[in-house]
Image (cartoon, rainbow, N blue to C red; front, top):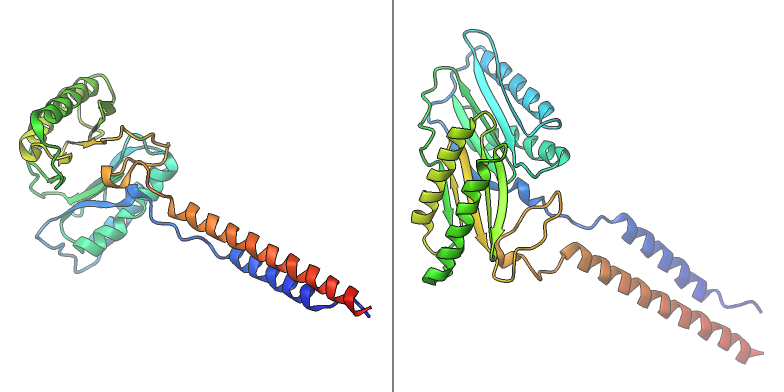
Length: 298
């Protein structure tokens, strides 16, 4: 008599299951830097009976996407004398070239989905933005507020506002000595600021100063706030448990989702690994049981 074949059947089945699990990718959420912040779409649609504007716009998007793998800011003009379109993109200063490209490459699709084809459009994601406008479009003031966001949670008390304002003052000072992007923190308050790539140092400083004043008034004691102006934007976030460390390609999350949160992908991997270990143990027991049964049969 040979060794019972049933345990080997289970062993074979186990390795088949392992192979299937290995080939099944763990779901990954989109990077946080691709989260939509706001959209700005001109009310006037692009009149384009011959398709020349669409062709110029497509060429513009292609150029901007190509440049996003090399730089954090690029501005250009495309089209003929009658169909001139100006456009630009900008990535957050701490994004890698790869992340910048991944972020910017999503923007033309979002513009088409959210705005259609107006004569001007602006889409802001958490990590990048894109703007285009047909020549002759009436531009808004560089200090006009495009978007604001204040957290519903309230930190409460003047102590928080003092810490927040100290961090914002540090941001103002830091922006004056950088190339237009600066981050810092003060006692659990993290602040970030960025100016558009072609804005001069003086105008950048004035824009950030205006944004700081607005976020103080608009957001009060909110635990987080953002102000976007045409030439710059700033944000602040309070982390009660301390500002978390940030990897080169990641971005800070809201206080409610940072800190001791569980990594879903890692959790699934641990569960699968544990299941595989249990399965292997069961198979070993079945195999041993088969050998003992064979011995008893002699």
